[in-house]
Image 1 (tube, rainbow, N blue to C red):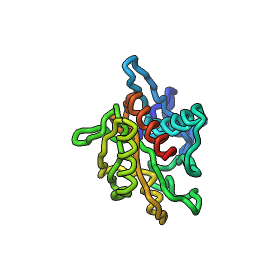
Image 2: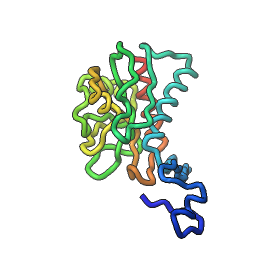
Image 3: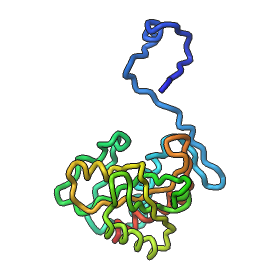
Image 4: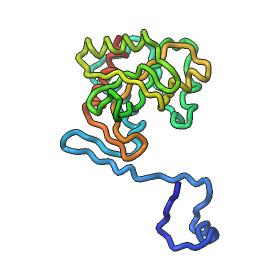
Length: 204
């Protein structure tokens, strides 16, 4: 990756004199835009969009005076992209792990930017069939638009959990996001439907 600095330097020494060093953390302007038609464009929707749906579901439950039917742990990882995100940090009595990650919108995929996607399989293998069927049934019962899809070239925190020896039911859902890992785009509808399915699962 090339980082262009807006300073006149011609040597390593001149650059270091500006306080710039190897290993420095840099931040990119995500260039967030929301359109009147409900589209949201930004860098890093993978995976800030999914975090937003989790908090959206929790906020909706709180506002309605509702509580999850089971003890619930919210685990937000900073390391999903490098493969060891959700390897640790779960209680011994964990029963289900519902992971939330963006759903790639691309040719030959069933995902779109307007529904929640339920993932059947990704690069780490298939997700728990019974759990997936329950999520599909919840979406149907609550009239939540959804697609089921597979992602042979993508992974999730669920895969990190498996590789660390985790042995509970794992499911994966998420909002549809176009232009993965670039200047990404999703739609408010997909975020809302993902939050609705999270809430429905927590109440089931």
